[in-house]
Image (cartoon, rainbow, N blue to C red):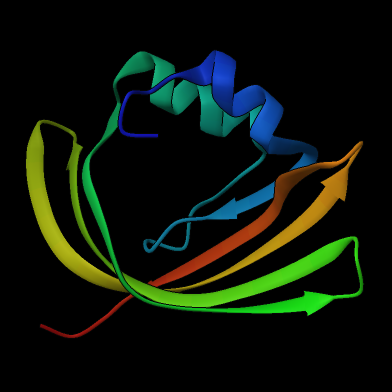
Length: 107
């Protein structure tokens, strides 16, 4: 995501991706990839600070965590912490992101 490598991300995201940003804006896979490719949103730094993985059998997993983020959006650089919930599914032996929901944490 920090390299905006949309070709690599295409294989890491499910076709039915639901990606919800800290702003509450929700994007599907195509919208999310377009946003990254256009430079409208740039992830400058992502530093995980906490992560718990819960497996749902052999084919699913839920990750609950926190990260420190530095993003560039609309020409502004923003730094903040988030809490997130990520859902993954194993497809043809590879883990893919199904859903992402993040919340900006208080300073």
